Amino acid sequence: MSTPATGVHAAHPDTSPDSNAGADAGVEPRRSDLLRFATAGSVDDGKSTLIGRLLYDTKSLFVDQLAAVEAASAARGDEYTNLALLTDGLRAEREQGITIDVAYRYFATPRRTFIIADTPGHIQYTRNMVTGASTADLAIILVDARKGLVEQSRRHAFLCSLLRVPHLVLCVNKMDLVDWSQQVFDRIADDFAAFAAKLDAPDLAVIPISALHGDNIVTRSANMPWYEGPPLLHHLEHVHIASDRNLVDVRFPVQYVIRPQSTTITDYRGYAGQVASGVLKPGDEIMVLPSGFTSHITAIDTADGPVDHAFPPMSVTIRIADDIDISRGDMICRPHNAPTPTQDIDAMICWMDETRPLTVGTRYAVKHTTRTARAIIRDLHYRLDINTLHRDDTATTLTLNDIGRVRLRTTIPLLADEYRRNRTTGGFILIDETTNRTVAAGMITSVG
Image 1 (cartoon, rainbow, N blue to C red):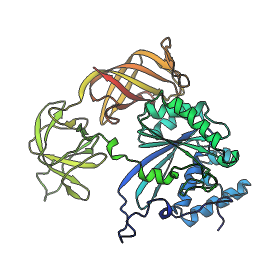
Image 2: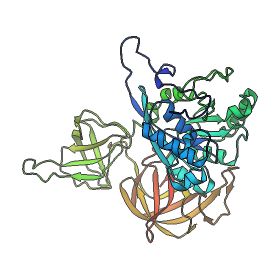
Image 3: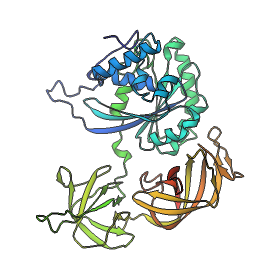
Image 4: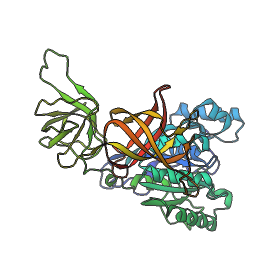
């Protein structure tokens, strides 16, 4: 079986620093949590190749998968196994050598499991990048060492900041093409740090890599002895994400009311959904919105049986002590810590419709958590220039991939929080009711 490229540093995940912690004591490392991360950057910066390299070097590929990629690479005339083909699944992507749709891949190490969103780099697919990064805990922004920061690098960094992705990693790729130069790396790192200072980027790491040859991906590269930080996989395994979750504000949007149609179970009524934030336990006092009735939790059920607590992003069924009229779209919260019911919302939106622009006065359907309403665009405050961060308050419309701040008026109150406080109850989508297309993704900046 051929290797993906010359100079490959093929390594088992156990060879990464600290990945076999506890092995000396005879204790198998525990795969403790899930990290969702997205790759972003300009065209041909190596996003798909990086993901292919991670999958290959962590032994996460089946033999037939690698054989299929080798065959496709040979058919394309490549002199090496093109690992980018592992994620470029659409025929158009393979023919053009670009990523169009968001490709999701899964892999795991003894320390952590990962879900990767490989997002496209072309500006016309910015909406796809927003989709992939919206649920990410971390974003990897790739930069070609020969080109440095380009417009799309800054665009994707800003979008990650707007989407409140807590952790950013700048990977300066293709270091082999600049002779492993520390000066090139330092210049790009300084340029990005200066730009990131304008953004809300609480955690930023910069790593020099060669995705094609595997340098600084799983193991430290001997070609860059001047770099003293960890390789990329070690950073992904150890980045702290537990504190990123909002465990204070209890938010449980009800998705479905469960009433088993069984002669043996006659008195079961449960409320199913996914915990958006906070921690729920049996005995906790809760309030149901919009009714405002209160009760307390008697049990929390999962597919594997009852549990003694629930936290995000667990999907559970909650049983309560009192018979309260609860249906899909209602919200379970704490009596003294509730979201704000509001019909007037200010939000930043990314426009995704290529056929119709956003205009003031247009009506749309709003999907917020499990609640659906109708809304009208009352005002367009400004359109944002992503490259300069300049606000154009003379703008009267938003077109494909534009980002702007708008004010909405909904037909029924939404149980919302600001997006910076809660990414679930602070986010929504707009839907064109005539075509049923999703036309915008929104992040609530203020309510009321």
